[in-house]
Image 1 (cartoon, each protein chain N blue to C red):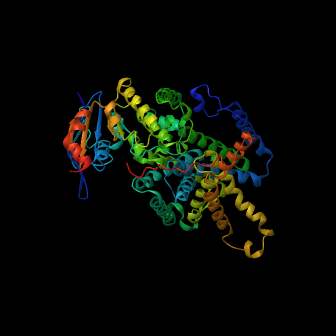
Image 2 (cartoon, rainbow over the protein chains, first blue to last red):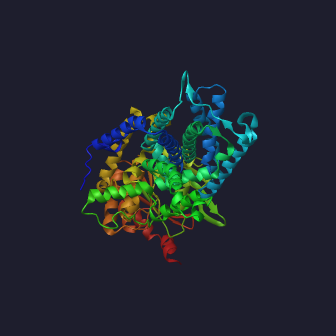
Image 3 (cartoon, rainbow over the protein chains, first blue to last red):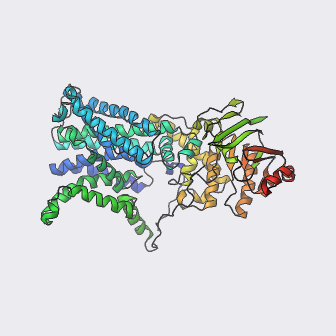
Length: 357
Length: 252
């Protein structure tokens, strides 16, 4: 059995709690830096996609998982990021500046979307963000002078000065660097007062307010940061798929991001990584096993969406903490072995939820 | 000196005048209790003070300033903390996180500093934690520090909520039925804590309470309300002997 012994306040503040955490994260960092040199291009590209989904997923996790504001329109922020970066690069802006601009513009639009969130909750907010995503798609289609309308635009390869990301390996390292920075920023935020305030708003707006939390500012901050990250992911997304058009950023993509945070484990940053790997790997897996399925299943056009739907239902009903929750349970089982009792990890039902003040 | 002054306060919901021309004032350093039958408007007065509801008419003065039109989160910034009748904790957080949120109004670092987690943020967090630990020690919450709220017993939650309000280092603490749902032993603890909060921390307490033995043992003054109006104000024994109060509780 394991006992946590805390000797100072910094234990609850620092990033790596134990020495073994430093070791394992160090090993992971080493694997991510050296491993790609020996990895086939196909897997490197998948790795880039995982990075992109981690960034966008972390953005949505901050907004929905921590601040409690549901969004069904996050594909629109991916689109804003992708288009901003693509158009600016066509105008000759170097990639790093175009990338920052994607984040900033997405954040600005996130603020605008956040304003209705000050009055809307739950399902109503979801519908409002959905409507917003349709508006963005419409603007991208109609504003032909800049976006080239429905026919879409080619995206220039990311470049800076004389350097150009020609290979998948270059793109992988660039994506990895941005992913790590983004995750670090979110992690820092979550252990700071601003992040705590977001969780407070999620759990009880009345109580948060009574402690001096400015609801409007906290929600708008969450929207802006979430949109900025999703915009950054969009810029990288445009670069890796090389061609973008308005019809790629559908409600399907928004739902994919929601599936990511739910299956990964709502309210956990580790979950975002698991969820991103899952979302990227699943279509590959389905493509891989298609040959072994009977034709009437394999040829169904909505096969992937159906699998998403079933898995989402499964996780919400059986394991609301997602893959992260499963991992926690396995870890708990082994650290407690042989003392683990059945039902030990079952959550208590809350019996005193305030309905009035 | 008056810390809080309620002047001719009224609010209606539909046709019901929940608070009807109530006036009273709370002196600095006292424990002031409000009693009254259900529906007397006690909690509504609290919700008006913490600005969850808008006032129809009248004024609320705090520390010499008018807070009648103040925004809700500003009320906390001015130094008014409260608990809720039905407990309003952050269910998915730990006890420690709930208490740390009490320190929110004292945090001064910017969002950018927090995203980079600069040394200033780190120092602030350590200082907040030290303050929170004082509260944990006072309320004997040590063994619940890392427990999630949704797994805690009702009595512990009540104490955590008081702790969270105290962590804001308020000058006025509003307690809405602190003893409801507590057993005798817990209520006894509460009696001592209220005295400690008043004497050692120098916090003025405005309390809604039904348990008359608790009210009698801690209160400097007691106010009785019925149907949104002030019935009587005085010491606990005066109030209990007041014929209007007896009539309000027992009927004519």
